[in-house]
Image (cartoon, rainbow, N blue to C red; front, side, top):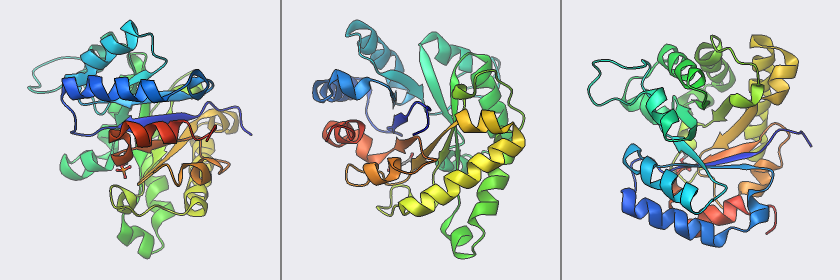
Length: 258
Ligand code: PGA
């Protein structure tokens, strides 16, 4: 057993307005017991418009949930219509920020270099980036998946500097497994997580790499969470579709007692 703190994050994507968000968090809290929160980070990443509502609920009810954002802008402020800065998120007690999700890489043209700058902005505001990497089905079929992911990783995190390695989370999300019902086998996920940790050791140091948390994401469900988390280099999950159901997400979070 490693002493890395597991992290299970709900990525709601573009779902739930602020009222629905409050309802979903209340339902989730109803299902969870104190022991489910102990020794792991449970992160809720709603859309921007629901951040304030979820933050207020977490504070008022003293819920041991952490707030996460799904994206951030690279710059601290300026003429960037429609964008949100890291300091704005930090003011809402946001603990984690997802950067470089494959959907943003695909639909918003985010490059590794942009992801790297976003992760720096997150760290500079005292929050923790969840840096996403993952290969396409073509990459995997061409047996090029490890190289593709390690190249992405290198270019997305190599400029980062931090004291505490717990501030950096890497989410391995094979693009073909996201929202598709297809999950990488636990062995495939572990193979990649191990390769990611070795690359992190080359970029930073072995002891730093040993303390950085690596999540798996891609069709995580109550039925597969245990086998995913049983892998030596996987420290948590980034959950999309199944996090929109309080029942399913509670089963995922509570996997240790069920
Ligand atoms: P999924 O999404 O669980 O619906 O596959 C995961 C993600 O995109 O983070």
